[in-house]
Image (tube, rainbow, N blue to C red):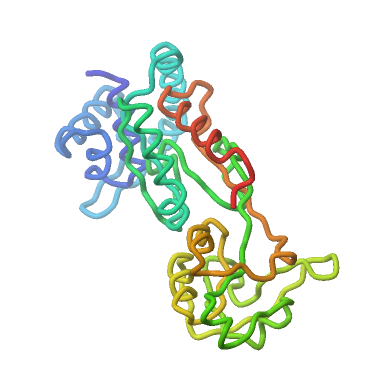
Amino acid sequence: MDTLLGMRTFLTVVNTGSFTAAADRLGVSKALASKYLNQLEQRLGVRLLNRTTRHLSLTEVGQVYYTRCQPLLEAIDELEAAIQDRHAFPRGHLTLTAPQTFGERSLAPVIAAFLEQYPQVTVALQLTDRFVNLLEEGVDVGVRIGELADSRLVARRLATIRMATYAAPRYLERHGTPVHPRELGAHTCVIDTNVDVPTRWLYGIEGESQAVDVQGPFHANSASAVRELAIAGVGIGRSPAYAIADAVRDGRLRVLLQPYETVEYGLYAVYPHRRYLAAKVRAFIEFLAGRFGEPHA
């Protein structure tokens, strides 16, 4: 049998947690994935996985094999990329992930332009606000906003994301326009729960970062939903500035308290640590850097 194929099947089964998911990722049937693993175990003369109808677990020797296999296959992938893709025209399938609202409003148009420039590339975009493990879920590039914690990934900073406080003209006509963050306590606010403490908004006041307590009848884990409620006149919202840029341009929303906005987040492209990147990945990261390379609002 092909030992490398068996090793790759074994790693994929462990990383995905099931033969079904591994088969889907490898593009083979579940029966064939099981056959490859059985042949690998027969060749080695050991059992690598304990299998039940509901659960897979590594044996003691399987854990050792898994630990040694992963860097070996990564080295082989790097070598192939170095030989085949380093100077090749970008082609093949690219899997991406990004936060929901940023992906819809800012990233999707960039992907469209990328596909126009590189017609031999296909893209699958996963939009979610949950943390995605790129290594385990087979993602080529992730776009992330905020602090980065996974040291196994390479991160390239693309831009700065700024926060914005805003409201619809109709709301301001009825309730007045706050000119200082402390006045927000007297207003109805629309709360984005994607931050650590949703009802405490941070501003630069008197030279330092200070929290202002806000309240309102609507909470959502979506900057898009907060924006739409604010446009409808429900209250004052606060989100990353990219979420409202078009509504500010056409007058549906007005930006408030801009001199006090000091909260910023990094916009990053992250990808698994490999010395040699496939041409499609390298081209996409450079394309992102070209589009978002200036401070982005």
